[in-house]
Amino acid sequence: MSFLFHHRTRKIMKIAWGFVAVVIILGMVLFFAPGLPDFIFGLLLK
Image 1 (cartoon, one colour):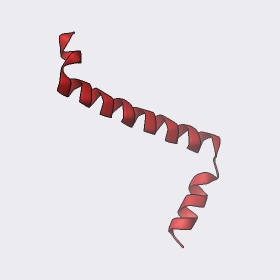
Image 2 (cartoon, one colour):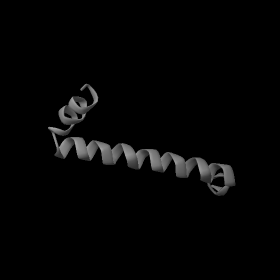
Image 3 (cartoon, helix red, strand yellow):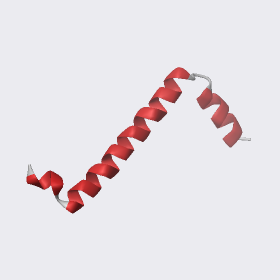
Image 4 (cartoon, helix red, strand yellow):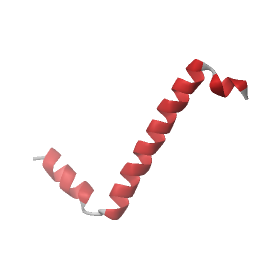
């Protein structure tokens, strides 16, 4: 288990957890706001 406390491993774990959190947040936003992707693509494709 000592590899979990290695400096480089800790940094990678922080980045991985941050990425997972962003994916979960985006998934929740898109799930609870079904019209949002259409709105965003409408703004982007103007």
